[in-house]
Length: 113
Image 1 (cartoon, one colour):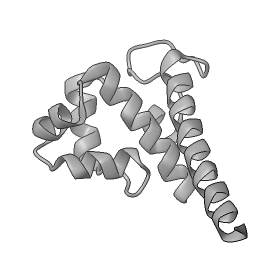
Image 2 (cartoon, helix red, strand yellow):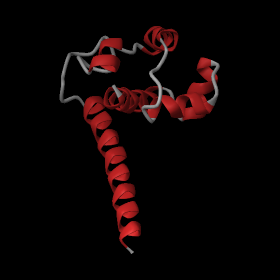
Image 3 (cartoon, helix red, strand yellow):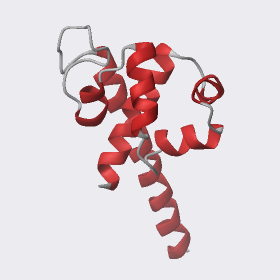
Image 4 (tube, one colour):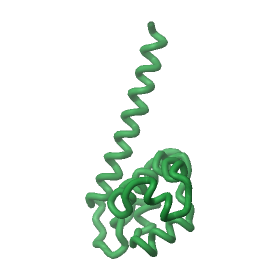
């Protein structure tokens, strides 16, 4: 489940960057705290259905893409699993995983000293 939240968070971030702007812009638009957006993007919590519905209505978010990675990020675009948005979301996820590995290695090396 945690891995799923990280993938959804990466897609959420990709969609926000391409369609809304920075975290503060989206937080203001949704009426939430910037930390809420950060928690979603970092895979700590799932985006609420109300927020996804709003983004679908206002910004043409394809909720099936957001939750399952199916289709394209915009609901009116042709389905393409290798779309820029899907690839961008995967890159963001890989960056997070690399950072976690780096921190783990640093912790292990520190213990070995």
